[in-house]
Image (cartoon, rainbow, N blue to C red; front, side, top):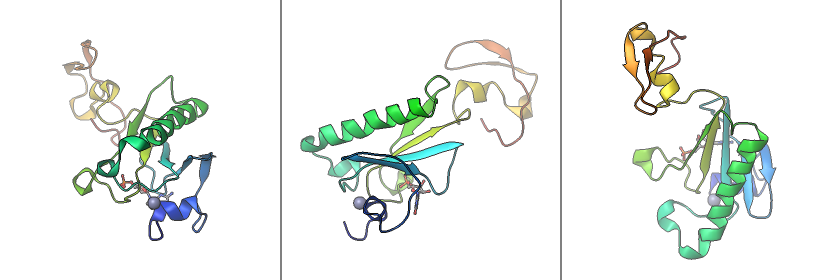
Length: 147
Ligand code: 5GP
Ligand code: ZN
């Protein structure tokens, strides 16, 4: 699609910091990373949103996800954990209307039980992790880590 930003990266009309490509999938670093690793993994084919997907595209989108998991392994994110996110529509924060997976990792991500156990403002008080059920005292960490 001629006016799509990500199609322009696919077609090399604008530069992208590409980390992986094959016949169907392209992956490049996000220009405004939200984590130490923030890679966008996209199908080369232009599909605007999840709403525009049809069953014929199941293989291409499935392959995009498989590639994302392989990239995560290559970047050694798999043992600590990572997040794979698709935003659909403006309320979810979609700003580029070419389907993409955000691959985020390299730190404890918001909502993870590690962050819930480390709230600085209540450091020292007891908390129970909603994910694993463990009870322990909150530890203080630098302010920029949220929970
Ligand atoms: P969305 O908000 O649609 O889920 O994600 C779009 C992502 O594309 C954002 O994280 C944004 O930082 C990223 N982005 C926007 N423009 C560019 C660009 O020109 N190059 C790259 N590499 N990423 C971009
Ligand atoms: Zn596109």
